[in-house]
Image (cartoon, rainbow, N blue to C red; front, top):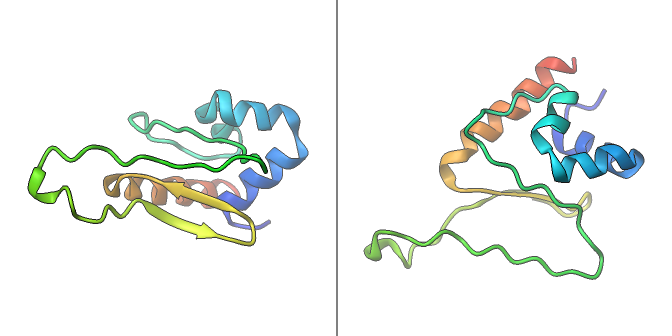
Length: 108
């Protein structure tokens, strides 16, 4: 079995309409079904990309004006062939890594 969490989510959403709907409406439950442990404090907003839509994510406002011009490193990965991307605040990268590890651990 492929150990890529992102590939598994994508393939399931393509093949299973119920999973595709659940991954958008109740992502914690959908991910739990494939062995992903999502920390309780992590909010997920998973969307199926539409071919006719351009997406833009506005970064959070900086409470520190002196850092407002700093580039925010939010994009964790972007794989153009499979077209998936995670966008998150820097502090959530550890939680994403833990989610990937739980998927690999629960899907040997």
